[in-house]
Length: 451
Image (cartoon, rainbow, N blue to C red; front, side, top):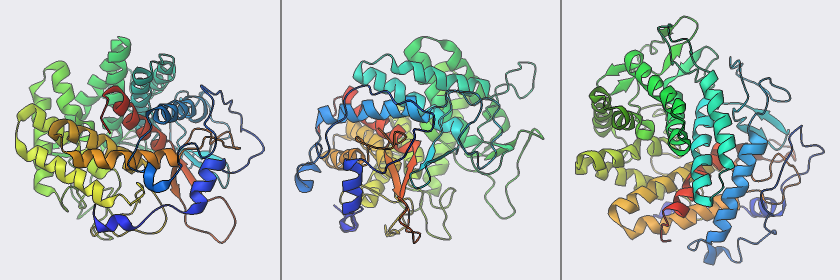
């Protein structure tokens, strides 16, 4: 284990508050919380920190998945087309909100907000489908379908329109541009749901969106334009001096699209991007020279190595070219170095793996588990298995199981914000922490990974 892992993210107040119930709030802000199963008593997960980190209790993991899915379905997911108590800080131009994930919640203010609801919802769909299979809970598909309907309505639906199938994947940059990576990170959930339900309509939406992006966003040489202005119906040019685009291989969507439809152009795009990533890898296992990383400040985004490292395993399985598997190994090692001794990691991790003291990223270490699972399946290297229970136990520690605030029940803490001089609760909740935890834990359960 790398010496940098000796910097722990655990603080006693974090553990006590997460296990004992978080912060009180007077009302549930209009959301009804229905428990799928009884919550665990405080302290049930950890009898001793040192003994628990390398061991993973399967029953506790299943319960954690179920309560996280309850939070996603009945607390975080919008049930109406119009906004109520939620902030829309970026003035995202969605006409329909039902089924979207309201993904940002600050315990200090009890306020909901949105960031990238299209791609967050697409990933939530995948979480719910995988959890329904892992836990044999088909009712979880209801929320997945609701999420898919949100994506289905927030797109160009007129087949006579030249931009038919464009998904309005607004994020937080402005309120007029669809973000290419946001589309890619949404469509895999539609394919997964189509396969689980037999409803090919979801797959058709995904197929058409990927084809639209290939026509309109792909620049060649492994790069995609980042933004498309939905008001002018034109791609947004990169800033002067900036790279013209990014090598987006998120969720290996073009290789999957090729396999589903047989379009050889999609397979070519996938490998052009993969080869570009091999050329531009820096530091080892990551890509600091592309956003959302920042080479000037040394900041490496906590999910970058997942989005672009995991598809390297898909490339290896398809081509048997060892260069791709070697790159995936380096990405997996980057996460092992970035993970702290108790399993957490930080949003701002630098080249030398130094970090700030706050702004944690539970979603990042959950993504690392997804990568480590696939690396172990491919290599049977025990080193990947040793990291998995440490990371998942940290995720479980971050989950609210006895919360007085019903908006927190079942949620996972994404981060702890820096002190502001007040006694406000510092917990920052993002749907992504629960979403990627559910994905990772569901794969552990379904595929019976032996940790």
